[in-house]
Amino acid sequence: MGAQPNFSGPLYQQVHALLLGRIISGEWRSGAPIPGETDLSRELGVSVGTVRKALDQLARDRLVVRERGRGTFVKEASDRWPGTPQAFRLCDADGQSVVPEIRTVSIVSGRPTAGEVATLRIPRQSSIIASVLRLRREWRSGDRLICLETITVDEARFPGLAGIAGGSGETLFALYADTFRVSVGRSVWSFRPIAAADVAHSGFAETIGATLLHCRRVAYDQKDMPIEISDQVLGFASEAYQLVQ
Image (cartoon, rainbow, N blue to C red; front, side, top):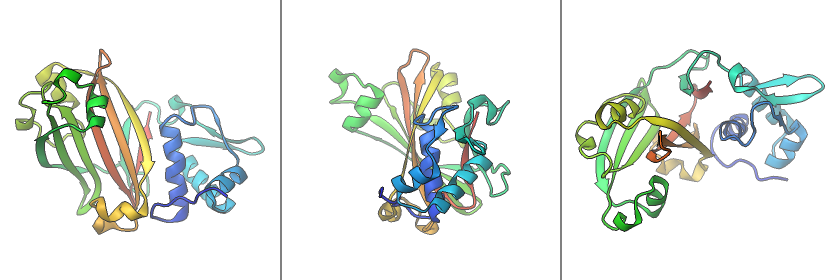
């Protein structure tokens, strides 16, 4: 038996979040078949019925197509949400778009971690005296916290950013382009569920019981140099983030 998912929320939603992460991260690519319900049931240590509910939700999300007698397949990217740009979209339980309120809580300068030095490719000769800027932001829907985000950049590359980065846009990409002439060429996402034991430390004390997912976006410029790291902790309840293509 596989290990049962160990983050909070209804069981089928836990499985849904795990399978969603595999699709978005590219582990299951467009057009690829998804393992059968029985195989997933054994791997995750849950019932076939729970897996079926999670796959049905992915089908409603328009991320997979279920074909009787053949199995379940990841939809081609162009068939998911045609005509819309690649982005995350916050929706309510009925699929209606929700516009979050985004507030910058703090902007702090500090020494980079070894991981930040590696990810942002801070030059080794300057890493001893380097500093990074960390912007902590809250995304809310009404009074409910739905996302905690920390954006980390190499401060030497964006001098003065701390004084102008307090806006409420979903990303800082336009600011990078307009002020520093740095345009985003691509973004790379990774995903992992957050264990129930970590919920109390995530900032989501008011939404204990929501499914939590950690998302990391690393944005690169046109020369494929890293621009920023965005770490997001998402709380799923009646809303859900969907990847639109």
